[in-house]
Length: 572
Image (tube, rainbow, N blue to C red):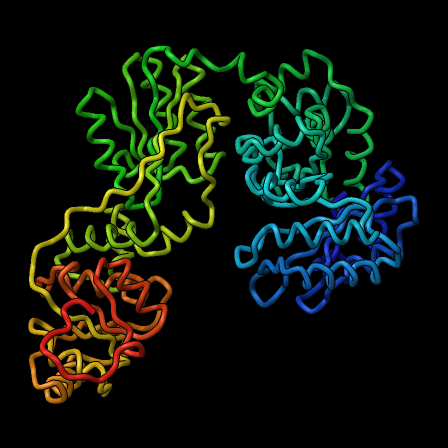
């Protein structure tokens, strides 16, 4: 049983629910150090459970999240995990936790650091077993290289099969790693949907149980341990009944037809997979937004492939995949899908649909670095607008032009991305390195960060460099007149014409101008006519260095450049 939702239930009812669950046969309870009534109630759910549960009930608890106003953020540092586990032991009144899980990977902490911390908790006897929650196959493998993983917790229900599509469930079952399924009814929003499902209703009626009990029994039949989260005593009856249900072959077949996730998990891949040389291949062309997928897809279309792209068809990926089904049923020609497909789960959707029609699937991965994709995205925006619009204007236009987007689209891809692997079912994975777009021809100019105004070293460099000078400035709130006055001051200071490209809209994370993003640099190239490779970026620190590198502009740091006389500084 999962205990998270009991923290917000009325206390008397919550206590009655726990007692009813234990009476129904529950012997494992899942909690976490961040479960509690409010943000500051650290270990509150654990302390409350300790007052109700005897030593014969096993406890699964988790650490690695910090709860704050409006959001929970990961903290996978070793010292944070040690402290969290010690706090859980004190709250539970136990010498060791039966199973201790990393609640979520922390993108700011190397996963191996968190894994070694789990290993130390295991070695010190603080935990009898350790595991993970909310991870993918590659992350699990990385942790397994450091510490034995006993269990993995994922979201899994008849209506939420991402964990099966991602391969994590199959990987764990194959390796003998226990799978705990939280939200086995799909969460509070989808739980009522189970009551209306015709297949579940029929089986429940035949067995004189609730449809929820059939759903739990189906998960158990897949080899998964479901973690329902009842909040009322009467809800616990489904748990006890589910543990007594053994599905018949006919019931299993009917449920697998209704929820194909089960059939995918049970049937060996070799039985579902077509021959690698079967005609009419499907090419899954993937990569970060603005990686160059449209150009790569066009090359395949010229060879006779039919293109399926969500931005072209409109709507969701689900709609696109339904269109793909119809097409594959009607024709045997080759197909290319050029969407981002950052996760295994999304790629699995294409693979299974192609296999259902006897089509092999090949993956082409455009491995474009984030910085290069950002530059491509801004050039694309310039091609459309002839300028760089602010975040709000871009957001409004993006509804009709999905290829025009803010930087958050690429950030989301990076947060979700799982590299493709042949084990997903691909005939092959072709990893194509980034190919830069042809360089623009233009003048040799000089980029200067606004923060360097008044620097003798900047003046020393500028005196020896002909060509346009462009100041990249972040001046939120200034109007055009104020920007023009500052430009005039710079021209007087340096005794030469200066172009100012300033970010003047309110600060926002969706701004392409904010360094090290390349919005202002690309704007300089496009509006002033500068050639990046022949120009020079004068800056200070890592942010300016990264900005120059992304824009393809040679860089000099003023801190490394003496004030000196001479004829030229074209090659610092």
